[in-house]
Length: 183
Image 1 (tube, helix red, strand yellow):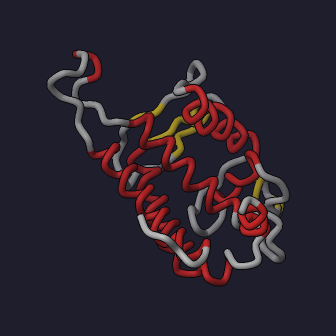
Image 2 (cartoon, rainbow, N blue to C red):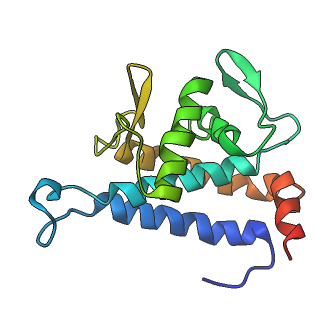
Image 3 (cartoon, rainbow, N blue to C red):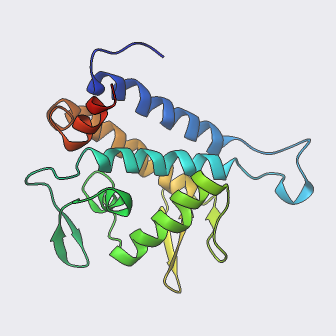
């Protein structure tokens, strides 16, 4: 942790820290001291929570960004408000997904919010430790399930791409103006 002269500078430290913590959680293997049914599992809940925070963060800096759109349900859409629309970023070239708006809403409400605010998941919503090259979001019966290793992989690429252009995205963004008001 350091003191930073700008939001952009801080993001160059905070996002890699979040990624490192998520990677640690996902590579961790529960062993001695964990209940038998959990042994061999990873720290998927905090890892996924951090990955959703990262996506939400990146999406927040694209909110109300002129000229920025992503394809949602076959239509070009901008990120107009906070909340689930920040996860529209998942369909951008940064994450390269093709999720419907309904799936994005479910990821936001059933995973991001419940994990971070209630340490829980809705019934029939699952995190699983799949292969890293696998799809981060597996849709089954209209419900997305999260492959934490796949989500980590696409998040690492997204953070790298975002940080490489953060100096052109963050200054003057709607999110930066909100942060500035909190001084």
